[in-house]
Length: 333
Image 1 (cartoon, one colour):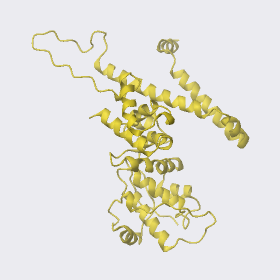
Image 2: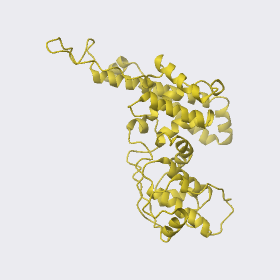
Image 3: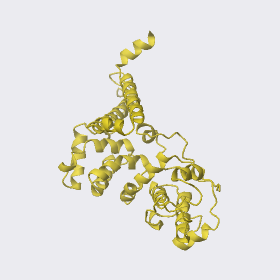
């Protein structure tokens, strides 16, 4: 049974290219103007009964049911209670406009409760047919919502930001993750907090055992910014007052022939490279300790494919990191 309707979720991913491309996933620009195929039918009355909201009212995370598990062996039709949960969760996804929290939790309830089972055999089929959203994106949203919910009293975050906070949430605890976001937000001041800012902040944290208290996060980030290890968190350069009339005006290029735009682009590029380096170190740590051998033993074909892909992207990265003059010579050859 096919059910079709329209769903727009424009902010599941930030519109900032920095949040999407630098730390991206397997999504493409514009992907998140999603179309949901289906009609709620009588679900509107169920939503109103369970939450006090009608179909035009976006739901809050508190109005969604707590995720629960239903065994794969259960094939019985949904109970009226489960149909109510499905209607509520689909209404949350339909009304989702700003925060990843509501959609992520709604997807988890549908997945773990197998609330799709009357119309679809698997959760993946349900995602593809009803929401036109890939499995990888859905699970990123499911993983992100607890982090986003914890941070939400300070400010709504998008999926890219939640993805950078999630390792802190898992390894250091919720209080440390909230403290990290709060301190980055404070250090950035009027500047918008991005996923790149959070990645840089996470990269300078000491090992979990050395971070005794969440309130130490601010000192760690402040020192890192002062030492140049977290340049994105450093205070902005003071504005140079305009020179008085008749005084010599410096040209736009400055003493070294570098324009202000080039300086800004260079600082941004350094921050991107530092964040990429932090991710490379994390990848290096993750693939050690017999991971490849275990993967090949479990599924040799898939393991070989993944090893090939990792080596291919490592080689591509090395190619991009060639000396600029070498690259110019090659292009002129």
